[in-house]
Image (cartoon, rainbow, N blue to C red):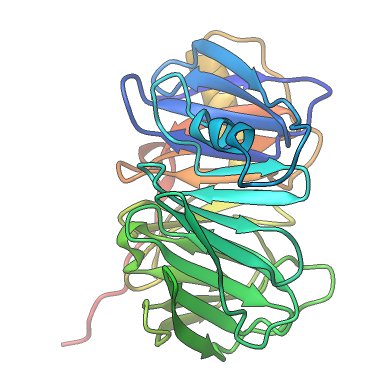
Length: 306
């Protein structure tokens, strides 16, 4: 499975692989605009432009109708949507929603009942992630302290050895059911369990751009900010398994689909995502490409000494 499409003069902000019939790739080109493609062959499946609400009060019926309609054509719930100053994280069944309204203000809505979450002393949350199955919430604050919340029950705030780096963006990814949480400050990769314990830590020899994990947590995909190399690690050990230049994967997709070859302008990826089967999607200078780890270079795995 490999294909690509080119969206000139458009910045790709986010990619989501949405399971269902058919499986879809959601391509966000603006905070309020998403296009859908069949994950298997790249056929367009429609677009959605979110309408701004006249009222931002979440108790209004209009708001409830708005969030209830945040579904893809295959009926999958959109995991992350931005509306005005509010970022909406949703569970897979749409019954649980996390609202980040700025700074450290978090609100959890479950079955129509909303409550503000304890910020644990944080003044600002830089990046957040929500497990779409059990509702585990992970967040990094302004000091890159790691906060974990199980629905409305705070687990704690933990020092996980990350440091805010100049000009580098911290990132988070969480596996479904919250069994594995991955955090990065732009140079150090950390695997944490849902109790805040650091299980593995890896200092990379490159600057990390994009970071994404498969829903089962078995794969962690990371992009090299400067070279455009995509690396896939084992989720449990942070051992590198595959790597390839994103531009090479894009060229292969163009050749296999008999498309005119075009080279991206830059090396830095705009977005990256991966599923349990090792299908990955990335955005590079207006190109959206779907590929597989099977098209990447397999790396030798460390052998245990006898």
